[in-house]
Image 1 (cartoon, rainbow, N blue to C red):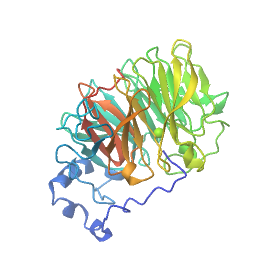
Image 2: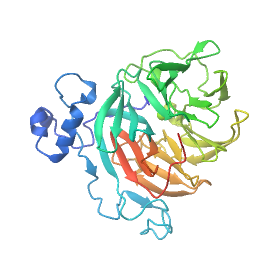
Image 3: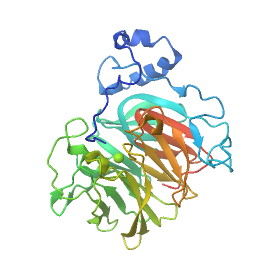
Length: 387
Ligand code: MG
């Protein structure tokens, strides 16, 4: 997302000595971690062409520093706190740890897992590309560039990629033959703002959010005046293709998620980016898939301002996992809530986190887009969404 917040210089806060940046790839080849980075470099890190010239030292891949079991990045808020089993944060075993599995991006967001290919796709928005991380051999490659500054990605029930595009100001579907179909680019004859995130219900309807982050400048899209007065949540009818507003009172609707029974729709409001009195929370709605409507809006979870939550996913038990970032670094990461909104625990990530998805052959590996890197952690939970 592009926000009104100032995107930090990539060198800030990491203790990076700028002089080291000039040493280039030769110096980077000195560690095993940079071997992985060099592999990533073959796919033009930071979107550059030609010889790879990273702007910063790529962060080391592998388990995060200090992740002796039990990994201190997995914080249980339930007693006994030492337990990561059923009595504590009921989503982790003691031998599960957070790993950085890929790095070298400017702003990673919108992950989606494709079980048939065992890979994760995610957007690197400023670099105008969709990346692919293959989990069988940890290979990183470019899936699509240019990507129209894509942001949120999801998968429909037929295994097709659904993508929200900032500079395209549209939602697209990548067909099984690779061709791209425009699903939605207008409402009431006017251009959408900049679709941000989407989910697909079992009837094939596509629900997406349309804040203005992607048209605020030229970094994560193309600057433009919004044509939609309100920043809506929309539904695309699976039969007619009609685009209709389902919620119109968000400040900035952002990440979306579905409960496993499809009776709840979760939508993040990151309106705090537009003003300190605006929301920074997740709302939950009763969802009627058949009627194509939502009702009974409630605030599900408040975020600790100035942090915001940009993405949300549910597991098969109905627990709600959401991203946290942009505020207190101690809050950067992921939160996990019961379906009733009781916070169970946190995953601490050393970067601002945008979005997340479940993947893995058992849908038990949580992939986390954290600024410059893709993180992953195996869990005892399973993601709710089936392709
Ligand atoms: Mg988003």
